[in-house]
Amino acid sequence: MTVRPIRVFGDPILRAPSAPIGEIDDGIRSLVRDLLDTVELPGRAGVAAPQIGVGLRAFSYNIDGDIGYVLNPVLVAVEGEAELVGEGCLSVPGLWHEALRHPHARVEGIDLDGNPVVLEGDGLLAQALQHETDHLDGMLYLSRLPAETRRTAMREIRESDWF
Image 1 (cartoon, rainbow, N blue to C red):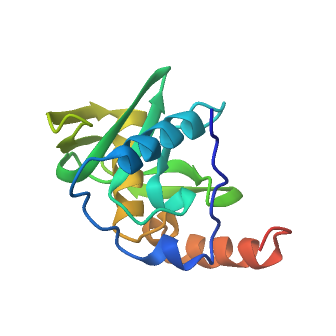
Image 2: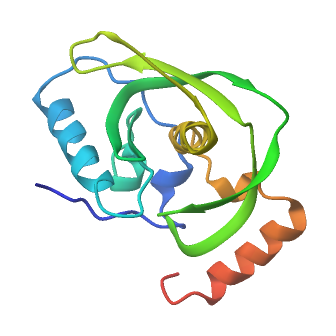
C-alpha cells in the first residue's frame, strides 16, 4: 500500500494542465494503485494525479464507499443551474467554502485496459467529478468561489501554518 503525500497550494504542478495518458504501462498501473491507496483514507472523496505530484490525466474517487479511478477523464456534460455547495480540497487543507458547482455531471475516460469508462451522477459524485477534472485542467476550487469568499480564503491560506 502506497499512500502518497498530497501537494498543497503553491506547488506549481497544481496550476499546470495535465498531459493525456498515452501507453498504459507498468508506470501507469502503479500510478492507479497509488491513487486508489491514497483516496481510501477517511474523509477523501477524490485524488487527482497532480495532487500526488504526477502531471497526467487520472484521478481516483471514493464516494459513499464506491472507490474507483478513471484515466484521461473529460467532463463532457453538466446539468442544472450552478449552485453554491460546501467544498474543501486536500491541497488546501483546513479550508471549507461554498463553491459554484452543477448538481449533475458526466465524465468519460478509459480504464487500465483501454475500455471506455463513464461516471455520471448527482450530488457529491457530481461535485467530485467537477472538482477532480478541474485539478487536471490546472484549476483549484478556489477559482470557483465568489470574489469576496475567495479573498477570505486567500487570507486564510496566507495565515495557515502549512503555507
